[in-house]
Amino acid sequence: MKLLMVFLVAALASVATARVRRVADTDRDGDWMAWKAKYQKVYEDAEEDTLRRGIWQEKLRTIGHHNLAHSLGEKSFTLEVNQFTDMTTEEYSSLLRSSLKRQKSTRTYAPNRCSSVALAGNLELPASVDWRQDGYVTPVKNQGEISDSIEFSVTGALEGQWFKKSGHLISLSEQQITDCIGVADPSLDQIYKYIEAKGIESDTDYPPSEEQQSCAYNPAKRAAAVSGFDTITPAGNETVLQTYVATVGPISVYVDASQDSFQLYSNGVYDETKCSSANLDHAMLVVGYGTDQQTGLDYWIVKNSWGPDWGMGGYIWMSRNKENQCGIATSATYPFFTCDQ
Ligand SMILES: *[C@@H]1O[C@H](CO)[C@@H](O)[C@H](O)[C@H]1NC(C)=O
Image (tube, rainbow, N blue to C red; front, side, top):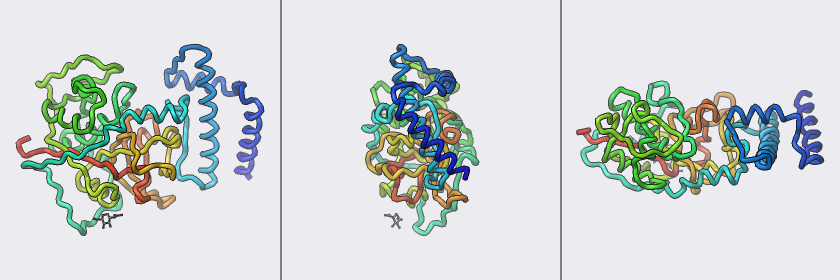
């Protein structure tokens, strides 16, 4: 009965909005102001405000429809308003696309490595893993507008492996990479090569900034080093990825994050049939995996770099064992060290 009421109200609301398409829904004035204040949105002029308001209301309808479907048991995850709610899906996904060309990562070299991975064929894997509970994972960061997700994915993986090696969890400086690497849009290879050559400071010593600055790296404050990175093969095999997550620690991945369901993701096991396993545009960090007790769905626990407000405290549960959905296992990498490091 209650669901029927919700449905009727939603249906009536959509009829009403269709009729007054061009007129802003004044009931939402307070919400719009509050949302802009929360995310510090400042627009050029009244015209842009109206345009953004229209997109925002369209997204509210998307969220409403999706969450209704979730309450009827048709969706395994919910949506919510967040910092991207005033952007069209095209605008949002064009932000991500900037990193598409940086996913190529084939360099593998292993001289004298100390962190070798012995992968027995019949390894008994735990049913669930969460490296956050073992101190491998720093708090969720926010990449802002100048940095790219791949920098956060690399520092996240290195933070985990550095903790494993040294016993110290140190939040590492993406700002240093942004300021000092000396190339626009660095690739995964270039980022690892840079850290290998120079080392990397902590976030405390080299703090994040809203802007790109001139390089202020101080080698005396080097907090971590690296010898290279491995790409997990065969690409696209989730059982193999599971083995590495269970035995190595947090693993860098690329996914297709271009759908509006990702843009507005809130909670639950993300399951998007429109997702591509090959066209990947966003880097994140797999920190574990498990199975949802209520739905029985397998998921990967994935750390994003859009602040703790996005998703589940900054995390998303990506579908696991669903034919490599969104390319979660297509481009997976992790750093290693040689014995003299
Ligand atoms: C993934 O790799 C495992 C272990 O090598 C293998 O048994 C399995 O068949 C592979 N799965 C797919 C879908 O290729």
